[in-house]
Length: 302
DNA sequence: TCCCATTATGCTTAAGTGCC
DNA sequence: GGCACTTAAGCATAATGGGA
Image (tube, rainbow, N blue to C red; front, side, top):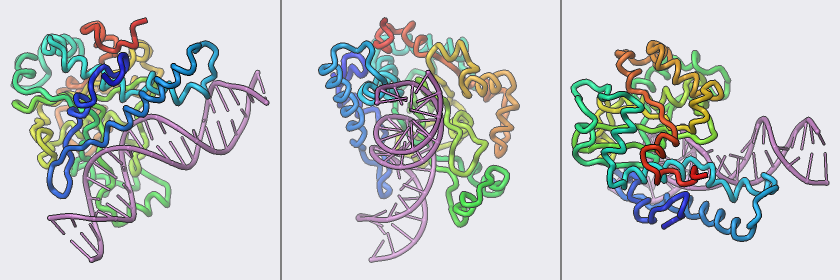
């Protein structure tokens, strides 16, 4: 077990949730991810051992060694793996999806959550999803409408790709039927708004954009994902869902849910049935996961 | 086809700034 | 002078494109 509270799983288990990567046209295992988790756990354990009294400790001493307490990588891996390895995985996930999206999946031709989950479910941490070709073309044609700093505009000259892949925090994927949930997880931080060449673009819009794009070239089973059967899920602390105006994502989620056409404004290169897309956006809290499965987020046991 | 430098995102971490 | 807050730098991973 890597850590009893923040990552109660083995290294092998954790490693199995990272996607294969494309190296010289071949899909190969990637083993690089472990080091970050192991180092962070080691810093934390050592710090606690040498500093048994926590009260009154200044932030400058604790911030780095105690990063794990607020690290979204750990929150995400730990919480989602707990659900993934739960003996009642399908029941747990169904409860969560009903809370986020309603009694029936907001997907055409899909009648039940059971149908979504039947088959072969995978959980991936930190998968990369390429920026859609249609967006990159559009940005190339509209660059000066989206940026205004000379040296940035100059650097775009001659570049093929004006946006890199979006690294989503996690993804559930059913490789039998293409059903997927793309997950953006937050602890204290807000969504990103600072990609290189588009000052208007926000992280949720990017997530929705890559959700709507096929990924035929990605390593299996990521290439099996059906964009028409993919949902977007935001996971945050309950505190910020109760106080949505404390974060940019609070404003954006409310806007996208109550006024679907606002998605069109943020994704001008696409024409979609935005009302339908809007229904595919969900927001859950870490506390929701804990309500469904007590073993989730053990650090919230206070 | 392979290698490798470059560059993208998405964070964490360190350095700089200024308040009490 | 010791902090917390703010901003910049740094790091990790992975994709990409050019050259051998």
